[in-house]
Image (cartoon, protein in one colour):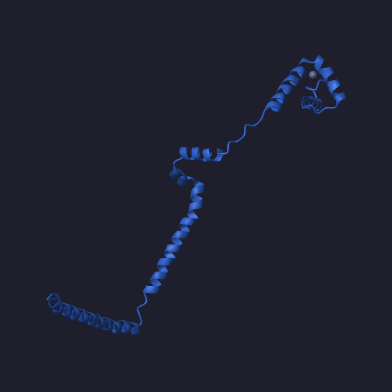
Length: 161
Ligand SMILES: [Zn+2]
């Protein structure tokens, strides 16, 4: 056979041989060639070493707190305010800030429109009519208190005697 390292289709054959995918008949043919071809022997040995390493390799189990430790390390390396200067953070925070501004403006406008119109004349009259009543009630209450305190003052000497 032609040297597998010199033709494309036979090169695939050599790779399949190293990956142990070949039929027994093809293996015999190829091994016969490899026995007489230094380049192919070298290639096959290096491939075998790779495959043996892959066979023996096992991924280390991921620790349960891997995510927590990863994020803590990220936080330790980047100060919190640096997020403000990242384009993505800005892009995300801008709509929220704009929304807050809009809400505040809407609140101010609504408040002003509710307050700015002058109260109707009858409302003013109501306010004026309520005030004397309140004053009267307060005066009544003060009078009662005054009488009560006078009563107590006049009673107290009798109670002591
Ligand atoms: Zn060869």
